[in-house]
Length: 146
Image 1: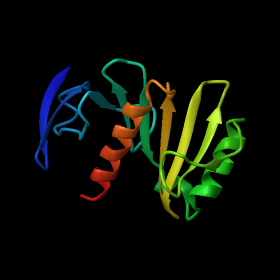
Image 2: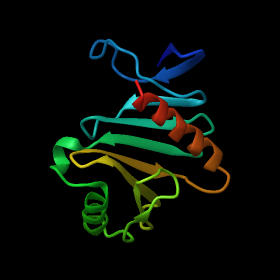
Image 3: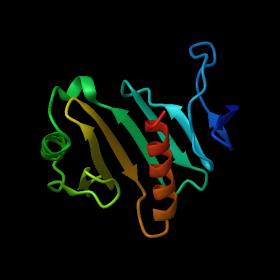
Image 4: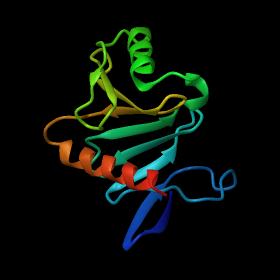
């Protein structure tokens, strides 16, 4: 486990990152009170967990695998393949589509432009964890501006 200090604007963030040091020589952006590590199961994917362990978010850039489809179409196909609820407009991110997989207790949120999509996989979302999740989404929005 290695600790990195990242300066983003005027806020300094400390992030715990777990991975084999000789394989990676970089730091990953991370909001305060969260830790991050590369997701070894999926390319272009990072797994974040809140320090209290109540909520986790995996952020996956799915542009290459999605072809030139939009967020609504991608979320519909993903929901069907995973046998989840049909997608609805997200109440978390503007112009995003959300679907819930009750069998595994994970919410999927797909957003972005056609051919340039991001999939969030959220575990542990509830009224108690909503403020931490909203903070995390603001962090993602700030990162997208860079």
